[in-house]
Length: 123
Image (tube, rainbow, N blue to C red; front, side, top):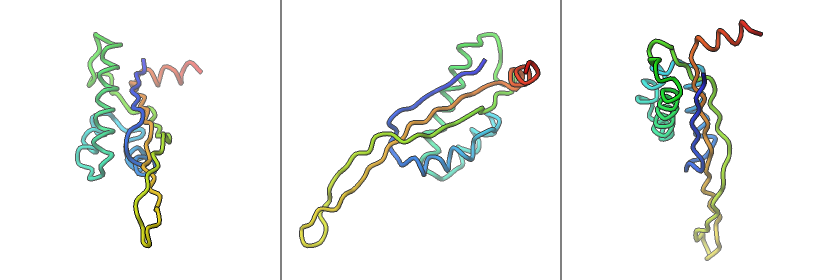
């Protein structure tokens, strides 16, 4: 059974967050948590918390199974563009200069290797 976690309107540009998401995609959960913990990018802390939330959601759906026994992997992680706050800062000669504060939406899907193998064998 897969579990998902979603974070909407997360501050930071989607382009920078996709760099962090590409590191983790398809990895084992334990390995990806270690990678995120030692990554120096600001988005890594946010993705790490969201990944832990997805793992806890998986535990709620599978009360008898252990995380280590089922070999959880990050099945998919998507980063979509969210709202953009538009602000103005003064530039030279008193002109306004537009600043765009971008946001993103992150969705993480976690699944066990066992269920992935069963789904591919059934097809």
